Structures are given as C-alpha cells and as structure tokens.
Image (cartoon, rainbow, N blue to C red; front, side, top):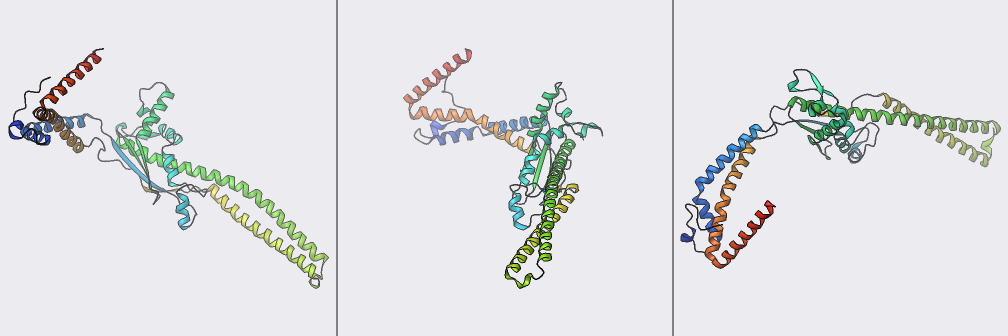
Length: 351
C-alpha cells in the first residue's frame, strides 16, 4: 500500500510546514479537488433522485378525535380522565390511543371491506390487500397484523385530550379508509363497554333499591305502630326521644331510597343510549401528496453522501502526507501495521 502519490492540486508539503495543523493540509487538499466534489455531489443527487422515483410511494392519512368527557365536572374531569374512565360512558385519551393499536381492533379492521384507489369502486378485505399471496390464513393474519401495526402511529395529547391516528399505506384512499374505520371501531367498543357497564350497574341498583324500599317500609311501619301505642308520647321525655329516633330512621331510609331510585333511572337511560361517545375533530381524507419518499430530502442526502464519499480518499491521503512529513519513522511503523492488519483481514475473509 503506497502513499507516495498525492492527488492533483495537493501541495501541502510545499505550502504548509509539517509542524502545522493537519487541518491545513486537509483544507488545501479539499479545496484543490473542489470541482470533483461538486461533480460527485451532483452524481449523488441524481442517484438519490432515481432511487426516490423507484421506491414505492407511501401516503399518510390522519384522523383525530376527543373522547367524551362524560359527566365529571371541571378540573376533576381532566385530571381523572388522563388515567382512567371514571364514568361508564367515557374512556381516557390514553386508553383510546392504546385501543387503536390493540389486537382486537386491528384484527377487526383486517377483515373489513374497504375502498381503495385501485379497486375501481369495488371493495376487498384489508388482509387480502396486505397479504394477497399467503395461503395459510393463520400466518396471513399474523403477518398482516404486524404489518398494519407498523403502519399506524398514534399521538395522544394529555393536556387537551386530543388523540390523532396516522395510517401510512401505498394506497391513499385505503389509508384514509383504514384511519376512519379505526376511529369507528374505538367508538363502537366504547359504546358497547359503556352499555355493558351500565347494564351491570342497573342490575345492582335494582337489587339495592328493592332492599332500600323494604327497609323504608319497615321503618315507616315501626313509626306508625309507635304512634298507635303511644298517643300521649309528648308528655314523656323518654317517649319523645324514642319518637325522634324512629322518625330520623324513616328520613334516612327515605333519602337512601330516593337516591338509589334516581341512580337506577339514570342507569336505565345509559344502558339504551346509543349516542356517540367520541367527538371527531377531523375525519381522515385522501392525502393529496405522498409522505414518502420526499424528493427534496432524498436529493439533499444524495448530494451530501456523494460529496462525503468523494472527499474521504483525499482527506485520508492529506492526513497521511502530513503524518509522514512530521514523523517519518512513526509513519513507517504505522504503514507496516496497517499492511499487516489488512493482510490478516484478507486471510480471514478467504477462510
């Protein structure tokens, strides 16, 4: 491996003393080959542009929504809503974001018939589009599930409660259809969960209201019997105390029964209520532009990589030239070690 020949225009030994900084040698070498750097950068940009044209296009569709805040008032609703759904008719933004990428939601989406740009009005199952040549249905579902999860991104804003789902696919119409369908499935899941919880709460309240009504009737019967047996109770302090205790028991049982009856009626309403529980901020629309590859970014990286690759040999040669002029003996030892290392590497590759 020889280092005697310097590239055209490199005159670092004549213009810069060996004791100077190696940066001076490298700068002179790079300036001397500026035309070649520009040429390499242009070639790199052209190659990157060709790659960007060949790479399959990807389109990203976005949909956003806010989970219904339920019936919690004020600041308490915002604080509790960040962690759990405290009411039967709400889910937290964080839970909604997790649901969007959960297996039940994604599996349901895979078997939905959704429109696409290349289907000419017809619809096909999403799993058939993601894995069209897979014969084994189980393997196809697993592979399609992984592929779909990779193409979905969820962003949850804890401060505002806004949940945004992004779907990136090769078909722009299909990407928008999948994003909207995911939001629909989360809404349906939330409504079903809310109704299930409301039904369980209704059954519990019915049982408790029945017990509370029986206790109220018993307390009223005890007070009635007291009045019938003690017509002149006001003349006795002991009887007045007993009458007050029985009357307070009736009042307490009556308040408990009224409270349970009110909650029972609300639970019955919640059980059959089918209003949406998600506030849709923006539905997914067909993206007009591709999200990947970006031509400008590809060309910029191609220019940088082309110039970098073209500059590496010149920078290395300028540095070794400076090193040889500064310490000839040390450079000879370095050159010998380098040659032994490369020879050992070639033997290893051959083996």
